[in-house]
Image 1 (cartoon, one colour):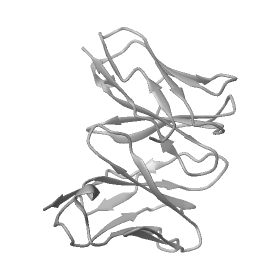
Image 2 (cartoon, rainbow over the protein chains, first blue to last red):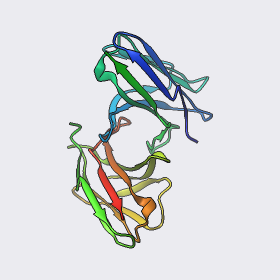
Image 3 (cartoon, rainbow over the protein chains, first blue to last red):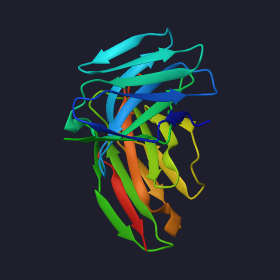
Image 4 (tube, rainbow over the protein chains, first blue to last red):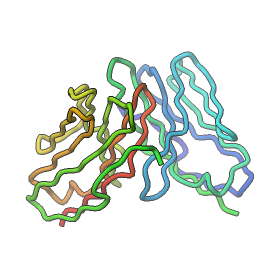
Length: 111
Length: 110
């Protein structure tokens, strides 16, 4: 089943923070975050594995609560380059690693 | 640049035709995944191959088929094309769980 992302869209000014949430009704093994700019390939940001870890990548970090089957992506001090659609992809474990993606969150950062 | 290559970049064809999309994974990656992205359906998993063998299937139509060759490149074959097959088709490759996407093939069916 497709994870649910919220919000669907968010508009920020440069320097502001945002949180994007991803929630699943299924037990998850891992959550993957991608950013996609229009007409381009999704770019891998990070993966969070079962275990409730938090990860960071410059000013972008994420958390994973496996008990609630939820993950959140935190963007701090946003830059114009952060604009794009953010997708979470979920994987329920097993020997295949196929991902089920949410519908995406459109993030627009304005000067 | 993820290291995954896809050809062609754009493909325009007519209904009823058959096309082949090609993907070369990153060096050392044994898994290849195919995804379809359309405006109404989002990013949908189609099929996964691991070292030449089919590993998982998603919502792939019977008109679509794929294979992975001994050199690990993969091809996605789409036949009896319909207008609704117009979409971006991505392949991704991985050595573990992290998947890296190629630039995609934009298919337009007229």
